[in-house]
Amino acid sequence: MKIKTRLAVAFIIITVFPLIMIYFSVLALSDYQEKSFKKAYGLTEQVDLLNGNSLQVFNRLTKQSQKEIRRTLDENPDNYEDKAYLDKVNAKLNEQYSYLIVRRDDAIIYYGANSASEESQENTLCSQLPDFDVMKGGMEGGIYLDGESQHLIKQMDFRFSDGAEGSAFIVSNVDDLLPEVRSMVKEMMFLGVMILVVAGVTLTVWVYRSILSPLNKLQEATKQIRDGNLEFTLDVDADDEIGHLCQDFEEMRIRLKENAEEKIQYDKESKELISNISHDLKTPITAIKGYVEGILDGVASSPERLDKYIRTIYNKANDMDRLIDELTFYSKIDTNKIPYTFSKINVSQYFKDCVDEVGLDMEARGIELGYFNYVDEDVTVIADAEQMKRVINNIISNSVKYLDKKKGIINIRIKDVGDFIQIEIEDNGKGIAAKDLPNIFDRFYRTDSSRNSSQGGSGIGLSIVRKIVEDHGGRIWATSKEGIGTEIHFVLRKYQEVIQE
Image: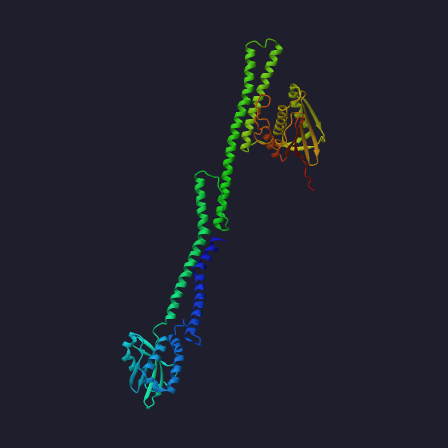
């Protein structure tokens, strides 16, 4: 949920939702109180305690008592001169928050006020009572202002047995709220406050979980990165702006961690490369120094021995040059600045020249080199001749390093495989274990960790080969059997002219 949507929901939670809840709660509470009120006072008519019309409530509250008083007045009016009877009637009216006044002719013979404030208003109120037969026995009564108070007066006229005029008044002070109404108002206020509190707490928890909690996690994650710790996971599962920010932050952390691991690996590989190059340079340098000292000391006394010493020095110098060349090329791989000069190359002629060039060295080493071409004379590819020659030399040099048979054999086959040509370089060396085979083209990977003069190397020769072949749009792989030999395969796409019609 987007933050914009969350804000809208928060507005609803803090405003509309409480209003709706309060409205329905008030309705439910009011209905409950009205039913309880009707049951408590034996009312049959609908009573609306919330409409603010106290007159209606008091009128209906005393209606049944008014009927009973009217009936007794008709049957035995002299009872209304009996104080004990009047106290009994008045007590019942007090339960309905009203009281009784009885007048004989112009004199008040009974005043049943139920509170000190009402008693203090006796003279004023009695002087405002309507005259005999003014209300004609109406059941609704009337409202009479009494200073700042309002009273509902129900007048019932009758005649005593001696013919004297009499009036019975049911008086209700409509200024006062009924206790049930006051209780209901308090309950409504309490309920309203509780609804607001619940809505506020709900909103706070929701905002904390959806906004503040992810921000706290994000803040803790920034502290972890500031302190150099990348070994943690920022786990925030939210589909909003903050969630997306946390996801981006987690991706950044993963990349930083990968870069840090790559840098550590790079530093390790660089140290290993320096160690390898240093060792492999030291070996031919030591040999050169030994042979030069032999010449200087006159050990090479015959022309044949002198020629052998000089050739050995030359070969060792070439080994040093090759190692330095690999190191230089390795630095270009890391910066993606390998200098390629692509041109159209005739496959048959190019690979024949390569074989002729390495053939002399193989012959000097006593290694049998076989060349088999199975492609047509006119087949061409687009390639960098110099870099492709580096591929051939590196593969052959790697094969030579691991030849362990008395008679070493290296075969080069050129095949036509449809849209590609496939070059296979096979040797009869010691072979490669199945567990090592997938990794031989990785940088610095060595199947034999021991280092000696016959199986040295920088460990980057075959990784350079793979880089060059892939930059030519080709693919390289190897097959091998331990004790039998290894075969390196790589393919290059043929050059085909597009004929436009």
